[in-house]
Length: 156
Image (cartoon, rainbow, N blue to C red):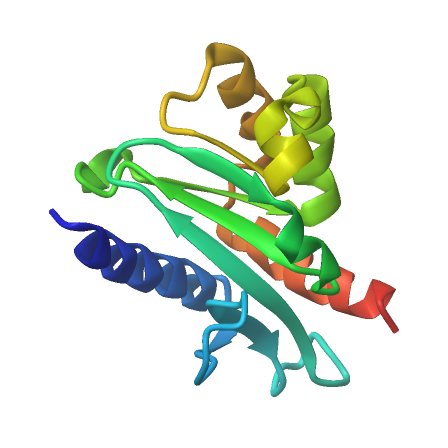
């Protein structure tokens, strides 16, 4: 599959995950670093509109990247959707930007030329160590709900 197809499949999978979590999804009209906005508005569980911007990275197998340009987006979630070529193995990892930077620091990526010069680092062959660090960020419906509701409340 080409990269545009992978992107579309990833976006629809992520939208499905968010809706299974009881969240609503909006698609920005322009690409300015946000792919989706997950929100809740009419729920007996919340009293006000709460939203979280999401930058999605979709991969047919596995890949992980971080870019300094997302630092400026308040409360952005970085959603890495993997294994889109094999749907029964598909998984999503969701991290706030500071959490992704913490992983990059732990793995030494922030000391690389790529990070120092270009403000980004990526790998299409995630190490066992990276995969282990990401496991705490494996998303589920409850995690998505809590991520959106709690992060939105914290930014008030």
